[in-house]
Length: 325
Image (cartoon, rainbow, N blue to C red; front, top):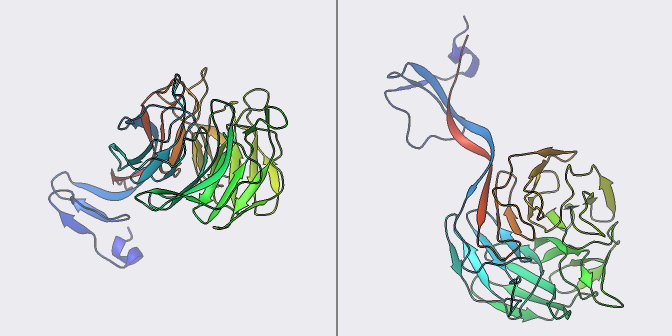
């Protein structure tokens, strides 16, 4: 038998109890249980309940991570319908922050918990907004940057100074979905190649130059997936389920579709090539805010103005017994 030290060049730590704060890749021998153990990433792929929103709503949006998130805007199912409410998440609870300057239903978003932008909106009255607001970690401020196509309920991603928005719902010349796509450079919005579909309520994951657009509503919920490389859109493998209502998060090559519809709670994972079914969401609803990564993310709110938050754990650092032969 070949000794471990001959392969790895180091001894294995012998302990009577497992370390309380191991590091990734650490290996040790537990002399009490007579087991060889290690600390490694393990696939979990499950949803669990998180803290409830302070303001239940739908058609809103979010940025950041599972432990440092921010959501804003949205709608109620009854008057006053639209809201400017903004809340931050610390991994367990939501806290109200300074509200948006404008009420925004279905705004676009980009950034982090401390540096974000909100743009566009379609209000219950049918009025659309083309304005942009900036968040500095404590307050929202209107900035002199307007969308070329005023609209709301569209897919978006990126950072506070390098954002992208596509699709949406506009009342001009008639109430229709749009293919309009625009990028933001920190100062102004610029029209880019149109999205392949006239669509609203699409989900998105990624950056301004590497974005994934998926799901949404054309004339019905769709399973379409499209990738942006900084200059053009490419159609990719369809989702397993047709969905609408945003609620996606991650990157262009590692995303989670945490959105649903009133008829499905199915969740899916994207690996850059194809979609795979994951464990189902607890709540069957659409129009949710989503944020985070494929490893750790969340979706919140939805359909009838619910306050529910569901946290996603894709992989988790876990102590595992190492078997040898």
